[in-house]
Each structure stands twice: as structure tokens, then as C-alpha cells.
Length: 496
Ligand code: ADP
Ligand code: GLC
Image (cartoon, rainbow, N blue to C red):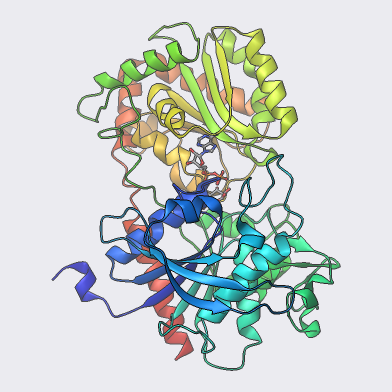
């Protein structure tokens, strides 16, 4: 019997504002493609709901109209289309797309205009995503498919549990997944009535949040269960500062919070990654140095197989801690080491990193922008991957790095702490060491870890063992998908 045949029937509506490879801005996009696919391999009948941005409508073939929604409250009329993901080993996961050109057919990103400013009507844009998500998850749905569970991701679908709470008929159980508590979807109090929520919900026991209304707070307050993307982050958000003002509510609901570490998709595998100059594996690491050489050549770094090359790929924001890296760049270069950074985000951080790179020609390279191919080459070509994040709900690159034999060097927070084992003589001896962890968020502690990494790098046998330990880890989605499935089943059980 295959795994899919042995499980009871479970229908899940998975709501997301982004999906890889159509419109990814970060980790949520990757999770939204990989987790539903992994769940469907477990026999869970998942369907995804996403707004009809140009990238989604242009990227999907054979779209069929399945329902119409009339204009109501401040929402324009919208059409619901269905299609299937253009990939997936187990048969492609079905999607519902909200076609509402007035709200979603625009140049720019899912959340921001081309200049990086939040769309002024984001409350309506994601209010509609939540509203239609809630309708599909209750007995008012125009479809004959009725999910048992509605799986909401981040603030953009945070109003689903609120709409469902005020719906009197039959409805799905709701799961609110926090990928990043720092993004809370806070709007003015008038938004409550504009989005058709009862005025009584504007209350501390409801959607009210420090005088405004918050989509995320609504989700966390009204949902049946909360998941965060790592167990450590689940604990960190119950106290300041990482609770970002929600710690009171979260600690009250602590019995209803579970941490589940994300998996990574099989697109991140050095054995068959099409973006690499040369594929390689744990048994034959010879291709790694070829990628390092190409990376050094492409980015104008001095070609040298022996110098430790540190890499980073990230959104350049306060969360990711690159300001800390800027404070130790000179020491890193003097070791001697090399540094390559790919990212985009806050203008001041971008400019400061580029200025530093100009000061260290041949030793430091910075590329501003979003470049999937270069991201893969950095994972393969760098010797070690840097993630000095102030906080990191899960993080994906530290897991890619381990699979690519590029031991990560990370700040000990959230998912980084849960997925990287610090190198010590003991952890190397027992085969668990996979990278370097520093705990105090200071330039000195970061530099200390960097020096430990360089010392380990110089001992070829130590470094090879570290690389191999990382490459032997199983970060596939299987275990995480099984944990989500358990939660879905427990919610169903509780509801009955
Ligand atoms: P977050 O979601 O907070 O940005 P994650 O570590 O979960 O962090 O996921 C980030 C994802 O986005 C990774 O797959 C990373 O490789 C990718 N990424 C981030 N910035 C870039 C970039 N400039 N170019 C290519 N990929 C990027
Ligand atoms: C968020 C977090 C990141 C996490 C990702 C996917 O963007 O910042 O840590 O890996 O979501 O869950």
C-alpha cells in the first residue's frame, strides 16, 4: 500500500500571497510551493488560493472559471479561476486564483509598488484574499468542494479566522501559520467596517492592536491552532522583544502553538542542480571547487582555491543582521578571506555594502537584485554561508548550505538554532557538527565564530567531516508534512 492510500481523507485550503517560481519574494514563496506538494504525497487533498497577480495569471495555463463573487463592502467584484501548479512529482496541486484586475493586475511586487512602497490599498487587496478564503471554507461556498481545514499563512490571510468566527453556519477549522511575526498587517480602525467585519470585533479581544486593527492579530486570536516555522521561534515569540507586541496573546494561547521546522525542496540538491557549473555529491566533492572558481571569476574576485570564501544571499533588512557583518568586513578580508553578498532591500544597507565592496576589490563582491541562478552558485561555490540574523523564524539558506557542503555560520536564534549544530571537538567526534553558531549579537561574537570557522577550514580533514555531516542531513519536507498532517487531524478530531 502506498502512503497516499493508507491515510484518511482530508481536504485543506492553503492560502498564500506568493508562490515559487511564479512570484517569490522570500521563504514563504518556497514553502507555498513545496509544502502542498509534500502534503499531497501524503494523500492530503490540498488546494491553494492565491491572488491573480500578472505573474500568476501569465504563468498558469488552462485556467477555468469556477465562481463569481459580487462586489460587497469595499471589495470589487472578482472571478475565481482554477488551474494546476506547473510542477510536482505527485500530480500537480490544484490552485484557485482570484481574478480581480482592479486590485492585483499591476507592475511591482505582491506587497509593494515598483519603488518598494507598500500598495496603499493592501488592506482591501488582502482583505479580499481573506474574505474569499473564508467563503470557500464555510457553507456559503459556491463550490462543491468543502475543506476540513483552512491553512492561513502570515498576515495576508489573517482575517480568514475572523470572518469564519462571525459566520454562523458550518465551517472549516483554521490554522494560522506565522512565518514572520514582524509583519503584522496593521491598518486604521476604519478598515474594520470597510472590510465588512462587525464593529464588535474592534476590541482587545479581537482585531484591535494598539489602537489600529491588525490582520495577524485577528488570525492569532480567532484561529483554532497556531504553527510557527521552528520550535525555538515558537518559544521566542511568547516574550519580548520577538513577540513584537503579540507576546501577551501568544503566551495566553501557548497550548495551541506548535513549532514545525520547514523542509527544503529538491530543487536544492548539488547532485542535479542545473544552475551549477559542475554538479557534485558527498561521495565526490571535486565539483565544489569548480563552482568556487567560476563564482570568483564571475564576481571579479581573485581566483584562489585556498582562501576561505564566505557567501550570503538574503533580503537586506534589519532582521537579517548585515549591519553587523559590515562592522567586521575589514577583519574578514584581513584574515585573509573573501566575501560575496547577493541581496536587495533597504537602500542604505545596499549602498553601504556596495561602498565596502569598492574598497576591497578582488576580495569582496556585492550584487544587488534577485537572481535565482546566482543564489544557487553562491551556495555551491562559497566555503561557508553567513546568516547573522537578529531573528529568524526558520531560515532556508542554512539548510541549503548544509546540503551543498557549505557549513553555515549563524546567529543562535529561531530556526537557525534548531537546524545548525555548532562545531566543537565533541560535536565533530560524535558526527553531529554541521556549522558555527554564535550567541551574543555583537560584532565580537560574530568575529569569534568567523575565526573558529577559518581555523577549522585550514584543517582539511576537519572541514571535510563538517561538510559531509551537513550533506548527510535530511531536510526534505517529509517529516514536516507529516507533522502538519497530525495537526490537521487533531483539529478535525477536536471539532467533532
Ligand atoms: P526570508 O523568507 O525571511 O527572506 P528565508 O531564508 O526563509 O528568508 O528564505 C529566503 C529565500 O529567498 C531563500 O530561498 C533565498 O535563497 C531567497 N533569496 C533571498 N534573496 C534573494 C536574492 N536576492 N536572489 C535570489 N534569491 C534570494
Ligand atoms: C519568513 C522568515 C523565514 C522563514 C520563511 C519561511 O520569511 O523570515 O525565517 O524561513 O518565512 O517560513
